Length: 243
Image (tube, rainbow, N blue to C red; front, side):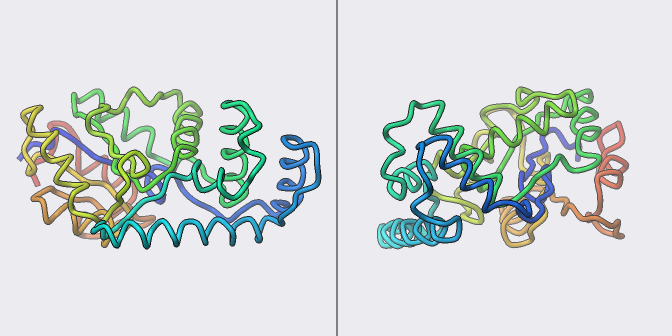
């Protein structure tokens, strides 16, 4: 069966995630002073704890409403935690939240990912995303793509699921059912769709449950459909493989 669409996870797959910068607390203090002209009223850890309380409350409310795998909208969480956020302009709020996110982790485009995306696009394969993410993730991905001479328009919008836009997240089967329906409207069957992700429980198992083919991204090659980007490219060598 020819692969006609490939859906990618973002964190841990397209973007490698590393620990926060060593000077995160100093950057946090500078970020707060820059945006609010005052010393931060919360440390970085205290801010995280306050946000976690809001997230826990919202998750509990969503689960009570029947959403098994809820997703929050990060700008609302931050707005509730930072009372002065409303005084900032829209671009300033976005900048504050993006730069705060960079204090929680560091990311970079996975080595070999750009070549795989280019190959698939050249071969006429539709590309999409299925990611548990927030608005700042979009900017992180844009910057990573730009570093490789690519842009987000390489992905088909209808095949992009970003959890913050829907209020629920992987591994909810509705993520993959939604994308399966959208794929069918494009004439693409589940057996012609490949999910590429790093987590069995979030990416691989729920995709298989919908009849998709799967590839688990990993730093080493393996005899099965598990391996690094080079191994994936070889598996997908044109004509796009029947496996």
